[in-house]
Length: 142
Image (cartoon, rainbow, N blue to C red; front, side):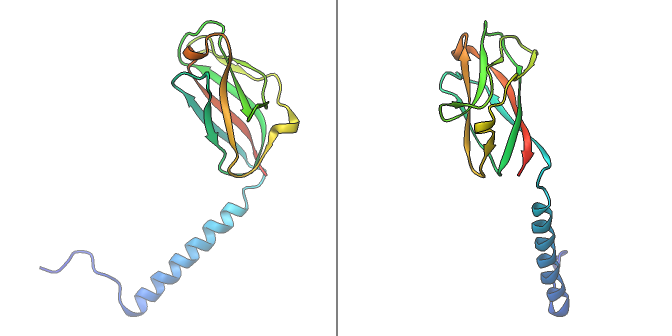
């Protein structure tokens, strides 16, 4: 019994190959046109955050905000966005489940990050081992 899906042959195969090249070209062009588009990168802190949760930034960007939604109760706990030991954001409350809080400060000296930069979301105070939440690194591509 013949196969239901037949491989392309001859001129049709060439057409298909040329379409793949065109699709690749369009993807490359679309990726070049994303400068200054807003982005949000979620970082889930689901375990002890006293050592921090690393996140690799997949493209160059300028950070403009940092939000946290708590997923557990952890008395007086906060999360902070850092680059190494440098604070990018102020400490943001992460003490109550379902509560949302936002940073009050973004340190401009550390807000521009390169493609592949590794940032850290770390428990800055309270009960670090119990801090749980979803944080959102906000900004725009550069």
